[in-house]
Structures are given as structure tokens and as C-alpha cells.
Length: 261
Length: 261
Image (cartoon, rainbow over all chains, first blue to last red):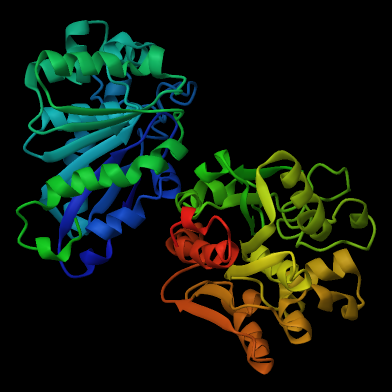
């Protein structure tokens, strides 16, 4: 498994909070680091950025590279239970357990202060990881997440093949279901472009908004007029997201005075 | 010919200054727009960004795609005079004349306020275009430019094949020669990474610095410790460059009060 890390200047003399970014379909660990312009703000707030790849690669599973929205580049942040995918496609456990361990062993990371965000499939991943591990992740946000995957063609395709046809199993990986079951301990920030061509059929952010309302979950959902699904959209609002996480990750810190909030 | 344009919000109600970025070897009109994080600052100062491709493409010239540092993606911002290149490779005239005309005809651009900058081969291009057209370009800067191409292997290869073996002809396209002949009307900003692997053999920024000293040309040459030749380097200092141009392009403007300097 490959991942990208940005170490802020503050990491040269102390361990720093970690902010994970989960990417969308077809991405690798590179896209966000190259295109989002996030380092500038991670440096300002003293956050380490960690960006995993979106799936295992070269596993030898027959057909893994055949489709752009399933298999390679499309791990969907679940632990597969069906064969042949279960042998390698364990992205949920990888993101939540294996990756943080690797980070802690190799970088000056403070794992008491972790946040997570993502885009599209990665926005889905960030939401479910955060809700299912609320102690671990102090903050969560998303750009144009697949917010109700059980009701979206992308999600249905991925879940049925990674998890099987038993839809009860899917609920643990659906943000709009999870929020009603477990909520989240702090406000969730979501940005969504109004001219995103995937909004109506695949992302279904409205369903998540409705679910949050049902359980009085604080949600800061911002519809951004005229923005699409691209990294230009992410780059336009990355500062707000990193500030959202910085506020949560740096609060009550003994080193607060080193950071500009 | 393809080019990329970023229109700042200010362009919706008035014509705005234009800042051209010339890219380096192998780039297209896309790299800078995707990787540099420049739009944020172009928006702040109200500058239109215009980024041309680095050469003609699909001209049918035999061998145009054979080498990464000559032909396609490597126009070197000269007007070729040798065959077969002279038929299409007229990048100098394209950047200085044809492109601004196309911009003025299709976008709310104020051609009385143009600046130019670039990276590597494009830093070379920006310097020579500005020095040879001082009325047209009010400001110039560069990231890691090929600053003395007559003395660099990349420059010698390109010039000998686009311009022929008569080295006198080359001088009009060499920043370190031109600065001694014509100078430049205002300070030049250059950023150069100290761990750029092309610095010693190909870029020769020191030669340009020496030439500037000989003629008392104001030069703000900043060696940036530990930075390489990549777009991460550009993204790290893009704000300073855009501010450098904004100061020149917005001064004495009747609309000054609309901009934050």
C-alpha cells in the first residue's frame, strides 16, 4: 500500500496532529497532494497530512483493473467479505488501524489528535470512519461525498460485490444510515457544488442532510454555486476545511500558542 | 494552439490585467493551472491568468515527438528559422503577438497591463519576452529559469536545431546576454531551489545574476533552501510572484481601490 505524507514545519520539533484525506474513484495517493493546495494551510496550522491510495493494486485478483468504479482505484473504504475481494480489499481496516500505526511508527504524529476528510468516494469513507470511531477522529468533513451509498448506483455496485447481497450488512458503511444510529460528537462540515454532475444520482447529499435533521446532528452543509466535482472545487474551499479540523485538533493543546487559529 | 485562462471574479464587471505563465519542458497548458495553486491569489489581486501550451503539436513534422527536450513540449519560446521547424515552431511570436490578440478578442483583458512569468524553459521564455518587449510587459519574474541557454546543454540543443549554428543569432534569446544589451525597466524576481538537480548544469542562474550585476540591473534572486525543480516549489512561492506582478500591474490604476495590495 502506498500513501503520501506532508509534514508541516512544526513537525521538526514536536509531534503534530494528523489529518487524513481519503480520495475519490480512480485517484491515487498523489492527486490530492498535487492539486488541492492543502500544504499551505497544513503548514499554517501545523497539521500532518496523510493521504492513502484508494485501493490495493496488483493483487492478482482476476478483473481487478477492468472497471474504473470497482476494484483498483475503487476500494470504497469497506472490508470486503466476499471472494475473491476479501483477500485484499480491506480498506476500512487499513485506514482506521494499519495506516495510523504505520504513521505513528515512522513520523512525528500525535495520534491523540486525528481528523479525517475526503472527496466523493473518499467523503463517504471519511464520514463512515469518523462515525464508527468517534474516539479516534476528533473531526470530520467532506467535499461532495457519496452520502447515501445504499441508494446510489456506485454504492450499490460496490457494496453488492464487496459485501454481498445482504443489505443489512451495508448499513455499517452508509453515512445516512450511520448518522441516525450513532450520530457524531461534533458538527460535520460538507461542501457541495451545485453544478456537480454526480449530485442528483450518485452523491445524494440531501439524503444525508435529512438524516442529520431527523436526529438533530449539527451539520454545516454549504452548497457552492456553480462549482463542479473537480479538484478546482476542492482547492477553492480547502482552507475552510483545514481550519475546521485545526480548531478541533488543536483545542486544549498545551502548544496552542504555537499555532495561528 | 491550446491555452488555459483563469478569469478572476473582478473580470465579471471590468477588464483586468493579464499575467502570462510560460511552462517548462514536457508541460501543456494544464500543469500550472492544476498544480500551482495560483488562482487563489489571482482572484485576490484581480489578475487574469493565461497559460499557453509549450509548443505546437501534431504538426506532421517528422520526429516532432521523438525527444522530450526538443520538438513537441519543447518549443523554447523562439521563432525557428531552420527547416522543417520554421513552418510551425514560432512560439516567440505566438506568445508576444498572436496569443494576446486572441485573449483581447475573447476575454475582458486590459492589454495595457500585462506581466509575464514562467518556470524553467518558461522562465527563460518570460525573461526574453519581457526584455525584448518592455512596453508590453510591465513586470517579469521566474522560477528556476534556464537563465543562460547558450551555455546549457538544453539551450544549445534547442537553439542549434531551431536557429542554426550561427551563435550570434542565439543572443536575442538568451536572458544573460539580453540583460547586458537592453536591461529591464524594473526589478526582476527569481526564485531558485538550492537542491534543484538542474541548477548547476542547465539553469545557470548565477550567470544571470553576474550579468545583472555588470549592468546594475535590480534583481531579487532568492535561493530557497532545500527546494527542488517541482511544482511543489512553485506552489510554495506563487503568492510572492503574483504579488510582485500585482504591484506593477495595478499601480496608478483608476480602479486601485478595488484591489487589496
